Image (cartoon, rainbow, N blue to C red; front, side, top):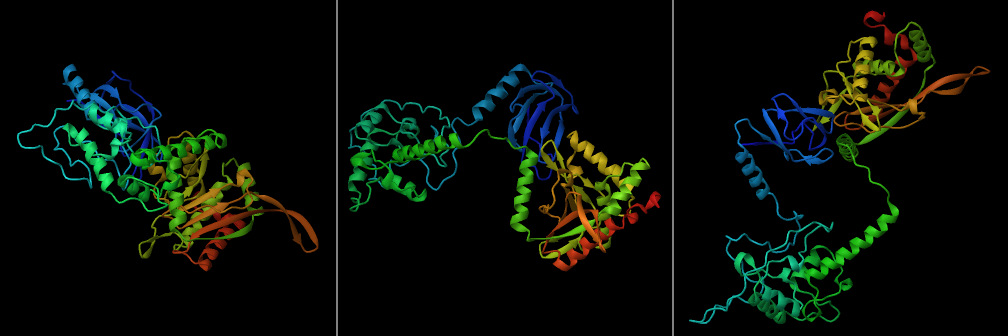
Length: 500
Protein backbone atom coordinates (compact mmCIF):
# COMPACT_ATOMS: atom_id res chain seq x y z
CA UNK A 1 0.00 0.00 0.00
CA UNK A 2 1.15 3.61 -0.56
CA UNK A 3 2.68 5.41 2.41
CA UNK A 4 2.20 8.87 3.86
CA UNK A 5 5.18 11.05 4.75
CA UNK A 6 4.49 13.21 7.79
CA UNK A 7 6.02 16.54 8.77
CA UNK A 8 9.18 15.35 10.57
CA UNK A 9 10.42 16.61 13.93
CA UNK A 10 13.83 17.94 12.90
CA UNK A 11 14.79 19.53 16.21
CA UNK A 12 13.99 18.83 19.84
CA UNK A 13 11.92 22.04 20.11
CA UNK A 14 10.19 21.89 16.71
CA UNK A 15 6.38 22.05 16.89
CA UNK A 16 5.60 22.95 13.28
CA UNK A 17 7.42 23.36 10.00
CA UNK A 18 7.08 25.39 6.81
CA UNK A 19 7.63 23.81 3.40
CA UNK A 20 10.24 25.96 1.66
CA UNK A 21 10.56 24.01 -1.59
CA UNK A 22 9.78 20.54 -2.88
CA UNK A 23 12.91 19.08 -4.51
CA UNK A 24 10.83 16.38 -6.19
CA UNK A 25 7.64 16.84 -8.20
CA UNK A 26 4.50 14.73 -8.32
CA UNK A 27 5.05 11.65 -10.47
CA UNK A 28 8.83 11.76 -10.09
CA UNK A 29 10.69 8.67 -8.95
CA UNK A 30 12.52 8.89 -5.63
CA UNK A 31 15.18 6.73 -4.05
CA UNK A 32 15.90 6.24 -0.38
CA UNK A 33 18.27 9.05 0.63
CA UNK A 34 17.14 11.51 -2.07
CA UNK A 35 16.51 15.04 -0.85
CA UNK A 36 12.72 15.24 -0.99
CA UNK A 37 11.87 18.61 0.50
CA UNK A 38 13.45 21.62 2.23
CA UNK A 39 11.75 22.51 5.51
CA UNK A 40 12.06 25.65 7.62
CA UNK A 41 12.20 24.72 11.30
CA UNK A 42 12.53 26.82 14.42
CA UNK A 43 16.30 26.31 14.21
CA UNK A 44 17.29 26.29 10.54
CA UNK A 45 16.29 25.51 6.96
CA UNK A 46 16.89 21.77 6.64
CA UNK A 47 16.78 19.21 3.86
CA UNK A 48 14.65 16.14 4.51
CA UNK A 49 15.62 12.90 2.81
CA UNK A 50 13.21 10.24 1.59
CA UNK A 51 13.35 7.13 3.77
CA UNK A 52 11.69 4.90 1.17
CA UNK A 53 11.94 4.37 -2.57
CA UNK A 54 9.03 4.78 -4.95
CA UNK A 55 7.21 7.63 -6.69
CA UNK A 56 6.05 10.92 -5.21
CA UNK A 57 2.37 10.30 -5.90
CA UNK A 58 0.84 13.39 -4.30
CA UNK A 59 2.01 16.53 -2.52
CA UNK A 60 -0.43 17.27 0.31
CA UNK A 61 1.19 20.46 1.63
CA UNK A 62 2.41 22.94 -1.03
CA UNK A 63 5.46 25.17 -0.68
CA UNK A 64 4.91 28.11 1.64
CA UNK A 65 2.41 26.33 3.90
CA UNK A 66 3.00 25.64 7.60
CA UNK A 67 1.74 22.51 9.37
CA UNK A 68 2.30 20.84 12.73
CA UNK A 69 4.75 18.02 13.29
CA UNK A 70 3.13 14.70 12.38
CA UNK A 71 0.72 16.09 9.77
CA UNK A 72 0.90 14.21 6.43
CA UNK A 73 2.70 16.26 3.76
CA UNK A 74 2.97 13.78 0.88
CA UNK A 75 1.97 10.34 -0.38
CA UNK A 76 4.57 7.94 -1.81
CA UNK A 77 3.64 5.09 -4.12
CA UNK A 78 5.84 2.07 -3.43
CA UNK A 79 7.25 0.02 -6.32
CA UNK A 80 4.89 -2.89 -5.65
CA UNK A 81 1.76 -0.70 -5.62
CA UNK A 82 -0.65 -0.83 -8.55
CA UNK A 83 -2.69 2.03 -9.98
CA UNK A 84 -5.70 0.54 -8.21
CA UNK A 85 -3.85 0.49 -4.87
CA UNK A 86 -3.00 4.18 -5.24
CA UNK A 87 -6.51 5.16 -6.31
CA UNK A 88 -8.07 3.25 -3.40
CA UNK A 89 -5.61 4.76 -0.92
CA UNK A 90 -6.28 8.32 -2.06
CA UNK A 91 -10.03 7.71 -2.06
CA UNK A 92 -9.99 6.27 1.47
CA UNK A 93 -7.78 9.12 2.65
CA UNK A 94 -10.16 11.72 1.22
CA UNK A 95 -13.16 9.97 2.77
CA UNK A 96 -11.46 9.91 6.18
CA UNK A 97 -10.82 13.66 6.12
CA UNK A 98 -13.10 16.11 7.94
CA UNK A 99 -16.31 16.96 6.05
CA UNK A 100 -16.98 20.07 8.03
CA UNK A 101 -15.02 22.77 9.72
CA UNK A 102 -13.33 21.81 12.99
CA UNK A 103 -14.76 23.77 15.85
CA UNK A 104 -12.98 25.14 18.86
CA UNK A 105 -13.81 23.60 22.19
CA UNK A 106 -16.21 25.67 24.25
CA UNK A 107 -18.24 25.09 27.41
CA UNK A 108 -21.45 25.03 25.32
CA UNK A 109 -21.68 23.55 21.85
CA UNK A 110 -24.47 22.60 19.52
CA UNK A 111 -25.75 19.07 19.72
CA UNK A 112 -23.64 17.01 17.29
CA UNK A 113 -25.31 15.17 14.44
CA UNK A 114 -24.67 11.47 15.03
CA UNK A 115 -23.76 9.09 12.20
CA UNK A 116 -26.55 7.06 10.61
CA UNK A 117 -25.70 3.99 12.68
CA UNK A 118 -25.90 5.81 15.99
CA UNK A 119 -29.02 5.55 18.16
CA UNK A 120 -31.33 8.51 18.08
CA UNK A 121 -30.70 11.00 20.91
CA UNK A 122 -33.44 12.29 23.20
CA UNK A 123 -35.61 14.94 21.63
CA UNK A 124 -34.87 18.04 23.70
CA UNK A 125 -32.87 18.57 26.87
CA UNK A 126 -35.36 19.62 29.52
CA UNK A 127 -38.39 18.96 27.28
CA UNK A 128 -41.28 16.66 27.97
CA UNK A 129 -40.51 12.95 27.61
CA UNK A 130 -41.21 11.27 24.30
CA UNK A 131 -44.86 10.20 23.86
CA UNK A 132 -45.32 6.80 22.21
CA UNK A 133 -48.10 6.56 19.63
CA UNK A 134 -51.43 5.14 20.70
CA UNK A 135 -51.77 1.35 20.53
CA UNK A 136 -52.44 0.17 17.02
CA UNK A 137 -51.89 3.64 15.53
CA UNK A 138 -48.83 4.03 13.38
CA UNK A 139 -47.11 7.44 13.44
CA UNK A 140 -47.57 9.43 10.24
CA UNK A 141 -44.67 9.00 7.84
CA UNK A 142 -42.41 11.95 7.26
CA UNK A 143 -40.12 12.67 4.31
CA UNK A 144 -36.47 11.79 4.65
CA UNK A 145 -34.23 14.41 6.21
CA UNK A 146 -32.43 16.77 3.89
CA UNK A 147 -28.64 16.41 3.75
CA UNK A 148 -26.54 18.90 5.72
CA UNK A 149 -24.48 21.15 3.45
CA UNK A 150 -20.72 21.29 4.01
CA UNK A 151 -19.75 24.08 6.37
CA UNK A 152 -17.17 26.60 5.27
CA UNK A 153 -15.48 28.62 8.03
CA UNK A 154 -16.31 32.28 7.47
CA UNK A 155 -16.13 33.61 11.00
CA UNK A 156 -13.49 33.91 13.67
CA UNK A 157 -16.08 33.56 16.45
CA UNK A 158 -14.37 31.41 19.12
CA UNK A 159 -17.21 28.89 19.32
CA UNK A 160 -19.64 27.36 16.88
CA UNK A 161 -23.31 28.39 16.84
CA UNK A 162 -24.83 26.38 13.98
CA UNK A 163 -26.89 28.05 11.33
CA UNK A 164 -30.40 26.53 11.45
CA UNK A 165 -30.20 25.93 7.69
CA UNK A 166 -27.32 23.53 8.33
CA UNK A 167 -29.12 21.42 10.90
CA UNK A 168 -30.40 18.05 9.74
CA UNK A 169 -34.21 18.27 9.64
CA UNK A 170 -37.17 17.06 7.61
CA UNK A 171 -38.79 19.53 5.17
CA UNK A 172 -41.98 19.53 7.24
CA UNK A 173 -40.04 20.38 10.39
CA UNK A 174 -38.33 23.25 8.58
CA UNK A 175 -41.70 24.67 7.54
CA UNK A 176 -43.06 24.53 11.10
CA UNK A 177 -39.84 25.99 12.53
CA UNK A 178 -39.94 28.88 10.06
CA UNK A 179 -43.59 29.63 10.78
CA UNK A 180 -43.04 29.55 14.57
CA UNK A 181 -39.64 31.36 14.60
CA UNK A 182 -37.91 28.31 16.02
CA UNK A 183 -34.11 27.95 15.92
CA UNK A 184 -33.60 24.36 14.77
CA UNK A 185 -30.04 24.30 16.14
CA UNK A 186 -31.48 24.27 19.67
CA UNK A 187 -33.33 20.99 19.07
CA UNK A 188 -31.85 17.50 19.22
CA UNK A 189 -33.76 15.48 16.65
CA UNK A 190 -35.27 12.02 17.15
CA UNK A 191 -35.48 11.12 13.46
CA UNK A 192 -33.09 9.10 11.29
CA UNK A 193 -29.46 10.18 11.77
CA UNK A 194 -30.62 12.66 14.41
CA UNK A 195 -32.88 14.62 12.07
CA UNK A 196 -35.33 17.06 13.65
CA UNK A 197 -38.95 16.06 13.03
CA UNK A 198 -42.18 18.00 13.43
CA UNK A 199 -42.88 16.26 16.73
CA UNK A 200 -39.51 17.45 18.05
CA UNK A 201 -40.38 21.05 17.17
CA UNK A 202 -43.74 20.77 18.90
CA UNK A 203 -42.20 19.34 22.07
CA UNK A 204 -39.63 22.12 22.05
CA UNK A 205 -42.38 24.77 21.88
CA UNK A 206 -44.24 23.04 24.71
CA UNK A 207 -41.10 23.15 26.88
CA UNK A 208 -40.80 26.91 26.25
CA UNK A 209 -44.43 27.47 27.29
CA UNK A 210 -43.86 25.49 30.49
CA UNK A 211 -40.70 27.45 31.37
CA UNK A 212 -40.87 30.23 33.95
CA UNK A 213 -41.67 33.65 32.51
CA UNK A 214 -38.75 36.13 32.58
CA UNK A 215 -38.65 38.60 35.44
CA UNK A 216 -39.52 42.21 34.74
CA UNK A 217 -36.60 43.89 32.97
CA UNK A 218 -34.99 40.60 31.90
CA UNK A 219 -34.63 39.85 28.20
CA UNK A 220 -36.70 36.82 27.13
CA UNK A 221 -34.27 34.09 26.08
CA UNK A 222 -34.33 30.36 25.44
CA UNK A 223 -32.61 28.14 28.05
CA UNK A 224 -29.92 27.02 25.60
CA UNK A 225 -29.11 30.58 24.52
CA UNK A 226 -29.09 31.70 28.16
CA UNK A 227 -26.39 29.14 29.01
CA UNK A 228 -24.25 30.23 26.05
CA UNK A 229 -24.66 33.94 26.83
CA UNK A 230 -23.64 33.29 30.43
CA UNK A 231 -20.56 31.26 29.41
CA UNK A 232 -19.47 33.83 26.83
CA UNK A 233 -20.36 36.91 28.97
CA UNK A 234 -22.65 38.28 26.26
CA UNK A 235 -24.84 41.25 27.25
CA UNK A 236 -28.23 39.91 26.14
CA UNK A 237 -29.82 43.35 26.59
CA UNK A 238 -27.98 44.31 23.38
CA UNK A 239 -29.25 41.28 21.42
CA UNK A 240 -32.46 41.39 19.41
CA UNK A 241 -34.58 38.26 19.88
CA UNK A 242 -36.32 36.67 16.91
CA UNK A 243 -37.45 33.40 18.48
CA UNK A 244 -40.87 32.35 19.77
CA UNK A 245 -42.42 35.21 21.73
CA UNK A 246 -39.43 37.44 20.92
CA UNK A 247 -37.03 35.16 22.76
CA UNK A 248 -33.28 35.34 22.07
CA UNK A 249 -32.02 32.13 20.46
CA UNK A 250 -28.61 30.70 19.56
CA UNK A 251 -29.15 32.07 16.07
CA UNK A 252 -29.56 35.57 17.48
CA UNK A 253 -26.38 35.28 19.54
CA UNK A 254 -24.50 34.23 16.42
CA UNK A 255 -25.80 37.18 14.42
CA UNK A 256 -24.93 39.55 17.24
CA UNK A 257 -21.34 38.29 17.46
CA UNK A 258 -20.89 38.29 13.68
CA UNK A 259 -22.08 41.92 13.54
CA UNK A 260 -19.55 42.82 16.23
CA UNK A 261 -16.85 41.00 14.28
CA UNK A 262 -17.68 42.81 11.06
CA UNK A 263 -17.54 46.13 12.84
CA UNK A 264 -14.16 45.27 14.30
CA UNK A 265 -12.93 44.20 10.86
CA UNK A 266 -14.02 47.50 9.33
CA UNK A 267 -12.10 49.42 11.99
CA UNK A 268 -9.05 47.19 11.58
CA UNK A 269 -9.11 47.72 7.82
CA UNK A 270 -8.47 51.42 8.27
CA UNK A 271 -5.84 50.93 10.97
CA UNK A 272 -3.60 48.07 9.86
CA UNK A 273 -1.65 47.41 6.69
CA UNK A 274 0.00 44.27 5.39
CA UNK A 275 0.67 41.30 7.63
CA UNK A 276 4.17 39.84 7.92
CA UNK A 277 4.32 36.07 8.08
CA UNK A 278 6.64 34.92 10.86
CA UNK A 279 9.36 32.40 10.08
CA UNK A 280 9.69 29.31 12.25
CA UNK A 281 12.93 30.68 13.73
CA UNK A 282 11.23 33.96 14.59
CA UNK A 283 8.35 32.11 16.28
CA UNK A 284 10.83 30.08 18.32
CA UNK A 285 12.72 33.24 19.30
CA UNK A 286 9.50 34.91 20.43
CA UNK A 287 8.48 31.89 22.51
CA UNK A 288 11.92 31.69 24.11
CA UNK A 289 12.16 35.40 24.91
CA UNK A 290 8.65 35.51 26.40
CA UNK A 291 9.50 32.47 28.52
CA UNK A 292 12.73 34.13 29.63
CA UNK A 293 11.07 37.34 30.79
CA UNK A 294 8.24 35.43 32.50
CA UNK A 295 10.41 32.91 34.37
CA UNK A 296 13.87 34.46 34.82
CA UNK A 297 14.37 37.28 37.38
CA UNK A 298 16.64 39.53 35.30
CA UNK A 299 18.93 42.18 36.71
CA UNK A 300 21.37 44.33 34.79
CA UNK A 301 24.62 46.19 35.29
CA UNK A 302 27.03 47.94 32.93
CA UNK A 303 30.59 49.23 32.75
CA UNK A 304 32.37 51.69 30.47
CA UNK A 305 35.54 50.16 29.05
CA UNK A 306 38.61 52.04 27.81
CA UNK A 307 39.17 50.33 24.46
CA UNK A 308 42.12 52.38 23.24
CA UNK A 309 44.51 49.46 23.94
CA UNK A 310 42.09 47.07 22.20
CA UNK A 311 41.90 49.38 19.20
CA UNK A 312 45.70 49.57 19.00
CA UNK A 313 45.99 45.76 19.19
CA UNK A 314 43.40 45.35 16.48
CA UNK A 315 45.31 47.70 14.17
CA UNK A 316 48.57 45.82 14.80
CA UNK A 317 46.97 42.46 14.02
CA UNK A 318 45.42 43.95 10.90
CA UNK A 319 48.83 45.17 9.68
CA UNK A 320 50.19 41.67 10.27
CA UNK A 321 47.53 40.33 7.91
CA UNK A 322 45.51 38.59 10.60
CA UNK A 323 41.74 38.90 10.22
CA UNK A 324 40.97 39.37 13.89
CA UNK A 325 37.92 41.54 14.56
CA UNK A 326 36.63 43.20 17.70
CA UNK A 327 34.03 40.43 17.96
CA UNK A 328 36.82 37.83 18.01
CA UNK A 329 38.69 39.71 20.74
CA UNK A 330 35.53 40.07 22.84
CA UNK A 331 34.75 36.37 22.32
CA UNK A 332 38.19 35.44 23.63
CA UNK A 333 37.85 37.80 26.61
CA UNK A 334 34.51 36.25 27.56
CA UNK A 335 35.92 32.72 27.24
CA UNK A 336 38.80 33.57 29.59
CA UNK A 337 36.49 35.35 32.06
CA UNK A 338 34.14 32.36 32.16
CA UNK A 339 37.09 30.08 32.87
CA UNK A 340 38.10 32.38 35.74
CA UNK A 341 34.51 32.58 37.05
CA UNK A 342 32.92 29.12 36.69
CA UNK A 343 29.96 30.22 38.85
CA UNK A 344 28.85 32.43 35.95
CA UNK A 345 29.04 29.54 33.47
CA UNK A 346 26.04 27.92 35.12
CA UNK A 347 22.28 27.48 35.02
CA UNK A 348 19.35 27.17 37.41
CA UNK A 349 17.75 23.73 37.35
CA UNK A 350 14.77 23.02 39.61
CA UNK A 351 16.08 23.75 43.12
CA UNK A 352 19.82 23.99 42.48
CA UNK A 353 22.53 25.73 40.47
CA UNK A 354 24.39 23.52 37.99
CA UNK A 355 27.75 24.51 36.48
CA UNK A 356 28.44 23.74 32.84
CA UNK A 357 31.54 21.74 31.97
CA UNK A 358 32.37 23.39 28.60
CA UNK A 359 32.47 27.11 27.81
CA UNK A 360 30.15 27.41 24.80
CA UNK A 361 29.68 30.99 23.65
CA UNK A 362 26.74 31.90 21.39
CA UNK A 363 27.31 34.89 19.12
CA UNK A 364 24.09 36.66 18.11
CA UNK A 365 24.05 37.56 14.40
CA UNK A 366 21.45 39.40 12.31
CA UNK A 367 21.00 37.56 9.01
CA UNK A 368 18.58 39.04 6.48
CA UNK A 369 16.44 40.51 9.22
CA UNK A 370 16.50 37.38 11.40
CA UNK A 371 18.39 37.00 14.66
CA UNK A 372 20.34 33.77 15.03
CA UNK A 373 22.94 32.78 17.62
CA UNK A 374 25.30 30.01 16.50
CA UNK A 375 27.47 28.57 19.28
CA UNK A 376 31.26 28.40 19.35
CA UNK A 377 31.82 25.18 21.31
CA UNK A 378 34.55 24.37 23.87
CA UNK A 379 36.16 27.80 23.96
CA UNK A 380 38.23 27.00 27.05
CA UNK A 381 41.96 26.80 26.39
CA UNK A 382 41.71 27.64 22.66
CA UNK A 383 43.73 30.45 21.07
CA UNK A 384 42.09 33.42 19.44
CA UNK A 385 42.96 32.37 15.89
CA UNK A 386 41.15 29.05 16.33
CA UNK A 387 38.13 30.73 17.90
CA UNK A 388 38.04 33.33 15.11
CA UNK A 389 38.09 30.68 12.38
CA UNK A 390 35.24 28.73 13.96
CA UNK A 391 33.17 31.86 14.60
CA UNK A 392 33.67 33.05 11.01
CA UNK A 393 32.66 29.64 9.63
CA UNK A 394 29.46 29.66 11.70
CA UNK A 395 28.59 33.21 10.64
CA UNK A 396 29.20 32.33 6.99
CA UNK A 397 26.86 29.34 7.26
CA UNK A 398 24.30 31.55 8.98
CA UNK A 399 24.36 34.02 6.08
CA UNK A 400 23.92 31.15 3.64
CA UNK A 401 21.10 29.76 5.82
CA UNK A 402 22.94 26.48 6.19
CA UNK A 403 23.09 26.26 9.97
CA UNK A 404 21.94 23.00 11.54
CA UNK A 405 20.21 22.57 14.93
CA UNK A 406 23.55 21.35 16.30
CA UNK A 407 25.06 24.76 15.49
CA UNK A 408 22.56 26.40 17.86
CA UNK A 409 22.69 23.83 20.63
CA UNK A 410 24.23 23.86 24.11
CA UNK A 411 25.20 27.52 24.48
CA UNK A 412 26.24 28.49 28.01
CA UNK A 413 26.74 32.24 27.46
CA UNK A 414 25.68 34.73 24.77
CA UNK A 415 27.29 37.82 23.24
CA UNK A 416 24.92 40.29 21.56
CA UNK A 417 26.81 43.01 19.67
CA UNK A 418 24.94 46.02 18.26
CA UNK A 419 28.03 48.24 18.12
CA UNK A 420 28.20 48.12 14.33
CA UNK A 421 24.70 49.68 14.27
CA UNK A 422 25.76 52.66 16.37
CA UNK A 423 23.87 51.64 19.54
CA UNK A 424 25.38 53.38 22.59
CA UNK A 425 23.70 51.34 25.33
CA UNK A 426 21.28 48.40 25.59
CA UNK A 427 20.51 45.25 27.57
CA UNK A 428 19.75 41.94 25.85
CA UNK A 429 17.38 39.26 27.15
CA UNK A 430 18.83 36.05 28.58
CA UNK A 431 18.43 32.95 26.42
CA UNK A 432 17.20 30.07 28.64
CA UNK A 433 18.65 27.94 30.09
CA UNK A 434 21.69 30.26 30.16
CA UNK A 435 22.04 32.66 33.07
CA UNK A 436 23.95 35.58 31.50
CA UNK A 437 24.13 37.63 28.30
CA UNK A 438 26.67 40.32 27.38
CA UNK A 439 25.46 43.38 25.45
CA UNK A 440 28.17 45.13 23.41
CA UNK A 441 27.59 48.71 22.26
CA UNK A 442 29.34 50.98 19.78
CA UNK A 443 32.85 52.36 20.12
CA UNK A 444 32.56 56.05 21.00
CA UNK A 445 35.01 58.92 20.78
CA UNK A 446 34.86 60.76 24.10
CA UNK A 447 36.82 63.56 25.82
CA UNK A 448 39.29 62.17 28.35
CA UNK A 449 40.87 64.31 31.09
CA UNK A 450 44.54 63.64 31.86
CA UNK A 451 45.77 66.14 34.43
CA UNK A 452 45.09 69.55 33.00
CA UNK A 453 44.81 68.25 29.45
CA UNK A 454 41.78 67.04 27.49
CA UNK A 455 42.29 64.53 24.71
CA UNK A 456 40.13 62.25 22.57
CA UNK A 457 39.71 58.69 23.86
CA UNK A 458 37.70 55.61 22.90
CA UNK A 459 35.11 53.92 25.09
CA UNK A 460 32.57 51.09 24.77
CA UNK A 461 29.64 50.27 27.04
CA UNK A 462 29.27 46.63 28.11
CA UNK A 463 25.98 45.57 29.71
CA UNK A 464 25.45 42.28 31.52
CA UNK A 465 22.03 40.71 31.96
CA UNK A 466 21.94 38.14 34.78
CA UNK A 467 19.62 35.53 36.24
CA UNK A 468 19.31 36.50 39.90
CA UNK A 469 18.69 32.86 40.83
CA UNK A 470 22.24 32.03 39.74
CA UNK A 471 24.17 35.24 40.44
CA UNK A 472 24.01 38.10 42.89
CA UNK A 473 25.11 41.63 42.08
CA UNK A 474 28.59 41.39 43.58
CA UNK A 475 29.56 38.22 41.69
CA UNK A 476 28.19 39.63 38.44
CA UNK A 477 30.13 42.87 38.96
CA UNK A 478 33.36 40.92 39.52
CA UNK A 479 32.80 38.95 36.34
CA UNK A 480 32.09 42.07 34.25
CA UNK A 481 35.15 43.76 35.79
CA UNK A 482 37.23 40.78 34.64
CA UNK A 483 36.00 41.24 31.08
CA UNK A 484 36.91 44.92 31.32
CA UNK A 485 40.39 44.09 32.65
CA UNK A 486 41.04 41.69 29.77
CA UNK A 487 39.88 44.21 27.16
CA UNK A 488 41.86 47.08 28.68
CA UNK A 489 45.00 44.88 28.84
CA UNK A 490 44.40 42.88 25.66
CA UNK A 491 47.84 41.32 25.19
CA UNK A 492 46.58 38.44 27.36
CA UNK A 493 44.03 37.68 24.67
CA UNK A 494 46.74 36.72 22.17
CA UNK A 495 49.17 34.91 24.47
CA UNK A 496 47.65 31.44 24.14
CA UNK A 497 48.93 28.76 21.79
CA UNK A 498 50.84 30.14 18.81
CA UNK A 499 50.02 33.72 19.74
CA UNK A 500 52.55 33.99 22.53
